[in-house]
Image 1 (spheres, helix red, strand yellow):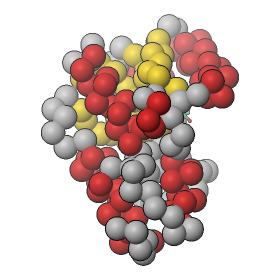
Image 2 (spheres, rainbow, N blue to C red):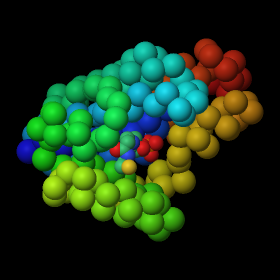
Image 3 (cartoon, helix red, strand yellow):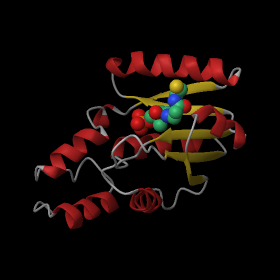
Image 4 (cartoon, rainbow, N blue to C red):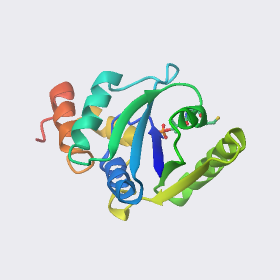
Length: 161
Ligand code: PNS
């Protein structure tokens, strides 16, 4: 079975990585699908984001990283993915994710979304919070994979290494 894990990954966090490690045990093949979103302002340029994901998932053999634009379900179909994966951190995520899974189910004629509950250790981590904390000089070392932390340190000049 092939699973598509779509997202912005701007940047990839320890929460994402935990989901990736767990789904890599459940499915034969994982495609991490990074959305090329022209309307959403990016914090980390796409090429750097891809490199950081690649470095963060090193050693997980059944994972590949791709980019996509347009509808997730169309991309999933083109890749012959059997399921879409989304992580749920808290009940507040549920409403948005429920709606998205339902529209995706409708649009795709039955492609299932499978939800993974975030490890409570990471349930407060979201990329936007990482960006804000990092931009203001806070320490995000425990929140992101080491390559991301290093990148943020070099880019933002954090002094908490
Ligand atoms: O990491 P994110 O930002 O929470 O990921 C959101 C993402 C990329 C999964 C979602 O915005 C998405 O699927 N965008 C592609 C367009 C689409 O298919 N939208 C859902 C149906 S309207």
